[in-house]
Image (cartoon, rainbow, N blue to C red; front, side, top):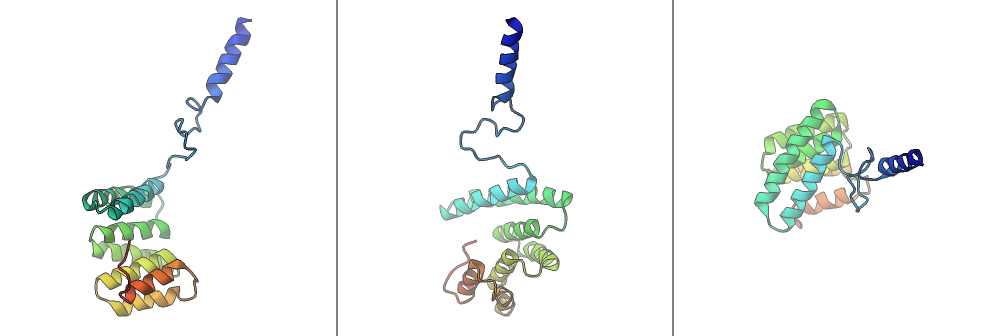
Length: 165
């Protein structure tokens, strides 16, 4: 009897979300926690965007800087990932470091010249730095993508919309 009780107790403990190795810490939202430096960086960027929408610039800037730290760690482990380079460029652009933003975007485009996100964001960088001719080159790359990034960049170039990101 005692043996059956211990077996049942052990089974309950092992299958419990609190003790399960693959659990998300017992979160009831069902959303898995970020596991990689990239995912944490991405989460920081998304938080920063939300702070920007609320005009909480200081908090947004802090989150962009945190994101850069996580993304740099990820890039060290997994270099040559255009998505990481895109976010590194994006976060640097958002904190006003246009020089590094352009470097990361350029590195990403060397790996994937048609990367939709990098082309849009680099185009927006060119608009902010008054290089409309270069922004239009990025737009031309996106011309046939049939994507929202093309439309967004086109509006930014035409001055009908500020770069929201």
